[in-house]
Image 1 (cartoon, one colour):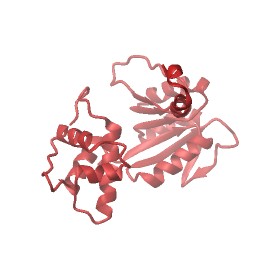
Image 2 (cartoon, helix red, strand yellow; image 1 turned 135 degrees about the vertical axis):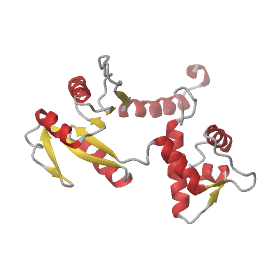
Image 3 (tube, one colour; image 1 turned 90 degrees about the horizontal axis):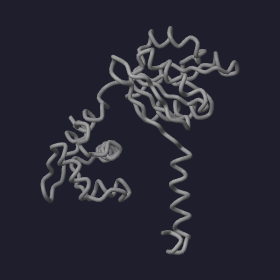
Length: 221
């Protein structure tokens, strides 16, 4: 198991796992770090791949590479992808709906089992057999379905209250799409894991790179 501070990028490990499954589906039994880099669009160097996998204890054979099935299984264990995870989404507008559709089609281990909103135009709708509940019903619904992960897709001004409500109902991890920082109070229980996804911030990285790439060298500095 990777310990905190181990230095291995979890997103890279996930990318390796996805690429390995892709190679396995294509009938491959082994793969080299160079082949894996190619499947990743050369966004990760073969030397980095070998370093990451070596840190996990996965040793390939020079000239032969890695055996795909056991390596993919090891990565699935490290990433927690061997388990089924139940997800509750709060905010079922365009973003919440798109996330639910994407994750249910893409990842078989993630199951959206509860959906909440405050809009009367949305409450009562049914998405893939899952009804959209009023957020006021969260205590009853969440205690019956036992969600481990909550997804926040509400406006920034509502996100903090939603996060506190989810934490109080024993949701152990939160994926926050609202453009704001969440502050959850300390608790005697295990702290809630929060991952913030700022889509506009990610786009600003691209616009920065595009802008800097068009500036004279003196302006870049």
